[in-house]
Image: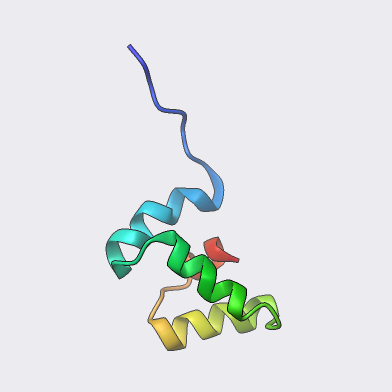
Length: 62
């Protein structure tokens, strides 16, 4: 019997982000890369205001 390793940390949220926002993680990482000049909370606020993310998801993308 094989078991999948337990996913911890920010990657724990990735499947939920993909389901809820119907985009692959590569899409979100590309968006974040385009906004690299923003400070952490600026990025969080940008993802919340421009893409409607709740607070837990933007924190996992940074």
